[in-house]
Image 1 (cartoon, rainbow, N blue to C red):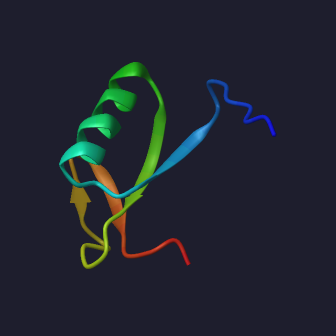
Image 2: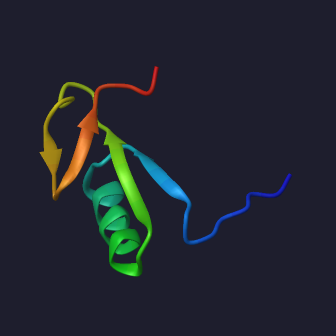
Length: 57
């Protein structure tokens, strides 16, 4: 199975703890379109400019 990624690909980060937050910031710095992240209990807020959601359900 191939995953096709280009400049139009949008990413939702699953988990923004210490490691996830670091890598999300690296992706953003590289130019990846990070459109949101999942962090249970923090839905409706933002972390480092990234909108947070309680779940992806």
